[in-house]
Length: 237
Picture 1 (cartoon, rainbow, N blue to C red):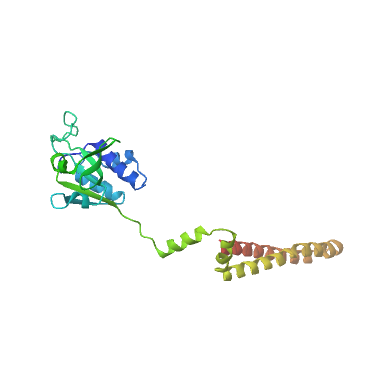
Picture 2: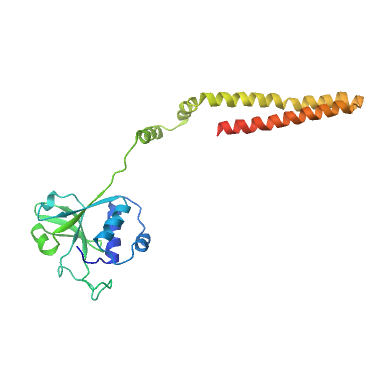
């Protein structure tokens, strides 16, 4: 498998595997990240980056129908029509790929890169048309943690009832928030009281010392009110 691969075959193969496993795939990004020449090593690196496991297997040692599908196979030299010339400037004959989807005792089903038409062939002809070594490709399953399972169960029954247990989990915080809100409401009553005192005492009796004391007290209450408002918002967040 040391023959170079065509870039369109490499991108098609990766895109097909991602499509089968429902994985997002950007062919432009892959072509930019992995410049030619492309080989089996390039495919392995790109597939691993996409979350696949790639292993090499010799079909002479194992029965084809017993392998895990899909798998990547290379046509033998002269086994398929190839574009003329050296496509990648390596001086080597370019390898062509096939994605084998299924195989039984008699026939196998495969797609020839970079096409979209399924083809079949007798299993007995596999060794004549393909290289004996194939690449087994499987997608790594994402491990599910207990927190993910809990979130999945709670998401299924999401509704107004969902908020009650969530709020009860933070009872100390809500207690502090409610206490702060009560204090803010009481502090808010000081403004009209100070206004009434100014009208009754300062305006009527023209006592500037009382006005200064009321102004200092009102400033302190406003600062205290601003601090409690910030603290309540912080606790809610």
